[in-house]
Amino acid sequence: MEPKKYKTNPTKLKAVQEALVSYVEEIDSLSQHNFSAKLNYSNFFEDKMLIIQAIKQGIPYSLFNEIKQITPFTEDDWANYLNVSKKTLQRHSNEEDYIFKPIHTEKIIELAEVTHFGNSVFDTQEQFYLWLNTPSYALSNLKPAELLNDSYGKDLVMAELNRIEHGIFA
Image (cartoon, rainbow, N blue to C red; front, side, top):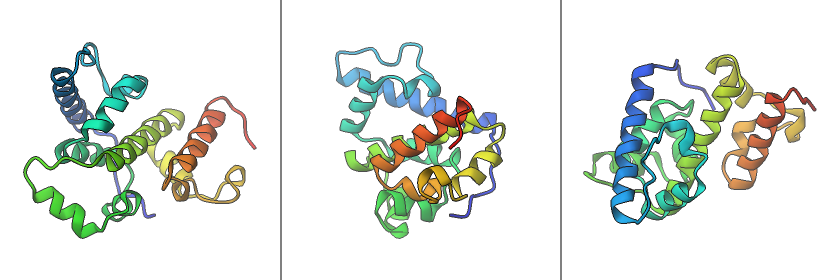
């Protein structure tokens, strides 16, 4: 995985925040919950019931596109993680109001969560992206990015990030 050149841009983060709030307000209108109250990008990942509702409903391509802008993953990486062709992703970008299937929505949210947590653990995004692409002894000498194809691998990566955050190195 070749990390794309990206620095945290407050404008991009704000765009994700606004798209997420708009999306969650739509979920609120379809359910009997009030998930959008005091919602921000960080606490979105803490509300598992909201995530479940988001997965069931599927996220729109417009929100995915905003999330994609703040992750280290290339278009090829996203196609690989979502198990679709790059051409299919490009076709979805041209479809007005395209909604991802639940299985793809879940993967998008997982990758956004890993990126969000990884960026908070490391001093810079560049350090996090380097870590993602460096074989890790604690992960059987695999690159953390290689483990993100399934939820079990994502859990291993999140656990390793948690250990790093607390200063516990393998």
